Length: 438
Length: 162
Ligand code: SF4
Image 1 (tube, rainbow over the protein chains, first blue to last red):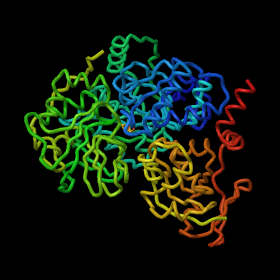
Image 2: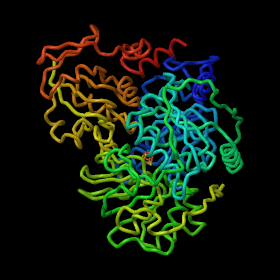
Image 3: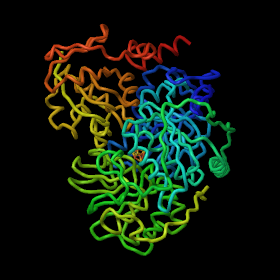
Image 4: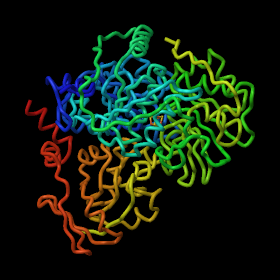
């Protein structure tokens, strides 16, 4: 019997010819990542493990993202602990504010996560990197410390869930709408413990930016990982990023065998989708935007590792055009990385947002986790391009968060209520996917 | 033996310990805010040895290890659930919070019932309702980590043996 791409990657990293779902394997890790929330606890656990130093200083990335720039003294302390750990062990990839951004957008840009890799991140959205065709998953700080100490991790080989998308996505439909449809179809734990493998002809229409959104939200269905087998889009993206940052490493082209076994399959007819909006307070409560009741919006957040790439900002800018933000709405735009910020700036997008009455900030997770830069008060309503609308996620437990793609978010900011982008702008944008900044 | 605190499905790590408290890693401080956004009365009334009893997908969401640490810090004897989200499952094993997968016990338990769990014997009981069940056993490999007292000791043993 054949193997899935996930099984092939895990077999190659555990010195076996093949692995099967349910096997527990010790896997070699190609990149370990932690952020300012998880790195300090990982550093503490590492210290208790009694090993002299990290297994490989060039395979660890530490990223200041969640509370960066430090929002208070306690978060400054967290970043100091992360920084001193990096210095002590001479960690090669430490990304400070102003030179980094949100890890899940940053590391692919940095060509640090490549097809065929095993990537372990102390952040649940580490499943994002799977868009490049690697196995990547999120763990907690102690697991990450063990990886930093040994270069290995124990993993239970996951069953795979195959998602098959068919047809050309209609105007306004991006990765966010596809993945929200999947989560609505299978539920918040519909892919629990599984590898969510995205397949089908629709992928051929999706930029790498959109694909990264697909894999980003695997965890919102409980999945261990999300993955897309490498194709020409992957090849073009990876080679252009490797060239841009001058970091080269060979990578294998792996794909699932035609007779590989899947635990289940979900079919999504992409050609008939409408933009999706997830009602509070679960991502699985997603419905077509047309079915959403009239909701007056207090805040719109265009940011996060889900939808703050250059494509997302271009879409938002296209919807905005020469409109202004509704007077009662606060719009926060937070580009995901320094490169995205610079690119958006060069294209005049940041000026456009600011001129229309938006707040534009330096890259950070910020409002996504209710940390800073736009925390919601009691009963406030927010449309967010992020991935989680759980109770209390963005601030007060009574605040209500609707998840949507960037076009719906911007349309809602202009209309002052949840809106279909076509209400503001009749034509959808032509997307130019690449990130030009080196 | 301890009292049951019952909750529903998909209790996520944002309600177990909200992000606004993630600037500390101190178990006692985290414990003061455990489950605050789901049940404001929990942290002040929970007693050492009490049980959190929940539905499916317990601990979904963020990878914050602060979640099992907060519950353990609050004195929770074990979390009994229909199922656990995978990162929470790993984090609980790694940090020594006892977790028990036992849908049958969840089915019969109401808040305030007396619960008893004996992992060595493989029994989880609702004493109030006088019913006992067999929780799902942990794979041998994971038991090895539990028996070491968590992942730190397990790694130490492995690296010293190597
Ligand atoms: S943007 Fe939000 S979901 Fe993404 S890593 Fe940051 S806090 Fe997590």
